[in-house]
Length: 282
Image 1 (cartoon, rainbow, N blue to C red):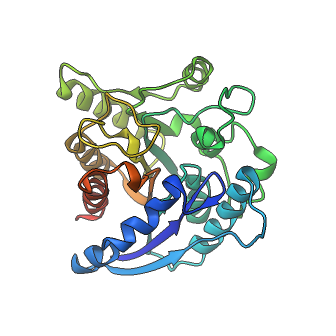
Image 2: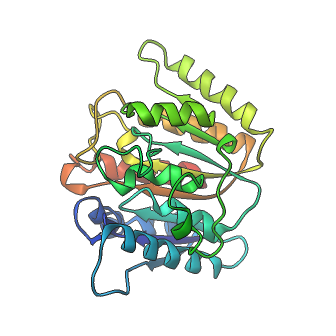
């Protein structure tokens, strides 16, 4: 397979700080070589801001425009993997892929469905999924080449642990399924996910997979400063990906929000490698 491995090494507009360090860490520890050794032709591209003064909102949208523009230049059949510091890179990735019949499977311990009117933290990256579905920042979103909102009925959210009250209300109002871990029975979790996928097959045929690494259980791995206990095992996510592949064509994926400063024994990094391999395996 032809792979385009795209780094977006920013966190909140800052280059190579906190989770912005994750993309380089993945590449410096051999991600491209791993994919090449698996028989994939792999090209690496780095997306960087071209402005002198960065700011969270301005820079995030600039990066998404650059990301979309780059992905739109890729040849047919080239598979984009976006390694980013922030989750909102999904917007540029989806705009670049520019598919009409696409849904999102969103793995994240957080909802990322806040808006400027509901957020209590003011954190732009707590709005990534809301941006992808066109719920906020519409004027800026339409400056991204190829942007079109993904319909809320074409989204499944997996692994949520920490949701604001207003965010819960918006997710419920949107009808987005929340597939959460059953602490007593992992098979119940997988069953709920499978049922949500069956419903989603009636809406779309293609899927963009987004994985915020803090969806992982912190007992196994802590991906960043926002990670909390109660997350999913690597095995559970792998099983979910296998089910996605049985039912949909995967047209791209994003791996986000990994801060190497919190990683122990490279556990999170290796988990990311495993998840990418699972997505790409025939």
